[in-house]
Length: 340
Image 1 (cartoon, rainbow, N blue to C red):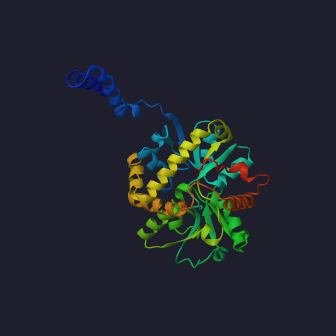
Image 2 (spheres, helix red, strand yellow):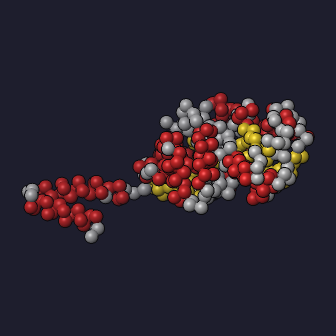
């Protein structure tokens, strides 16, 4: 017997045996509202493409889904695995996903190439970009990068930002020996000592270096950009101009639900870890918890989701200089109107 059939039977029995029959429809309506309205509510199906495979920074999204915040906003959200920020930008711009996750670095770069996407919510208020060295390397500050070997993906944001970061620290980028490393071999190559400096993400690869280093008796040291006065906004939710113009209610709903997901994550990080593991059971729980904790450090803000004019300006200036971009305005890449 279905729920609706059971409710009908219950209403008729109660209505005939205990109350005047005229009350039976009221009982039926009450039962239906309590048990069927939510399931019968038509949800809008949308796709949200991640920047990479699921990891700590995505906790607010997974917990918003697990705790029903997207459903409460009338959304049925499907997460799509990403293969990098530029991949996410292409997927959203091509109409294969409604929203995506990327750093403003990538959004600015894409915009300069004519891709019509814009940040609608900053969910990490500090960039996770960092550089890692081993504590026994003799590198104690970015000034010590001079004359050392750096290994990374030449197309990655860490590589492209490195020269601007070094110049800000008074280091000539030409003194660094740049080596190209396959991303899949990055950790192993760094452990093997093939280069001195590795790109890192505070909420992703940095915990991996810590764990893998401990296994071989080595301790890494991190240089987080924001700790050295090189402030960039962190990861953002982005949409196309057309979606922003034609469907602002959808974006507002997604942003509200995600903010609730962040608040839940901040209150109970382990629940957020569990929410990700429920969908991605092969992930390492200890590593994932470290990623979530680190991501929460970057997410702290007086107004979660909102990018201050100062932060937007600093990010745009730094990225434009690093990438050799001109002609891009703040309003081309940021839209704060969806954040409460």
